[in-house]
Image (cartoon, rainbow, N blue to C red; front, side, top):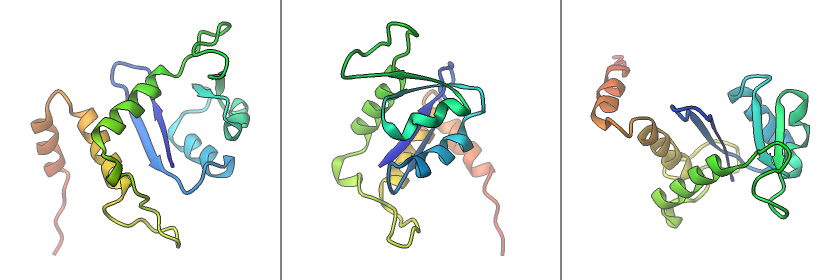
Length: 142
């Protein structure tokens, strides 16, 4: 499973985290790490998101009824569009779990591809500049 969030700004900053399960105990701490308290979060009505309203302005959309909440105007189009981009970029064979039984991350799974997707999205207008900046941030030790 992958938990993701996209900021509704021109920069569209995002986080994409592979998770071992979709329980509230797993998802809520990740959201609290990546989203400032008091921020507005828009989700579907999945039960694990139920308590987000304690820390965030939590708006929901019940997709079995509508795609845009008539009262709040909330919709999940931003993250749904991101998921579509991920599915187009990462083939089915590369959507395998990176999480081992002991909780460690193994290379070559979806986690690697999510990182690449985020990097390419961040630098989509200038991949070369992104590459040079990444090189500058590498430190070598002997």
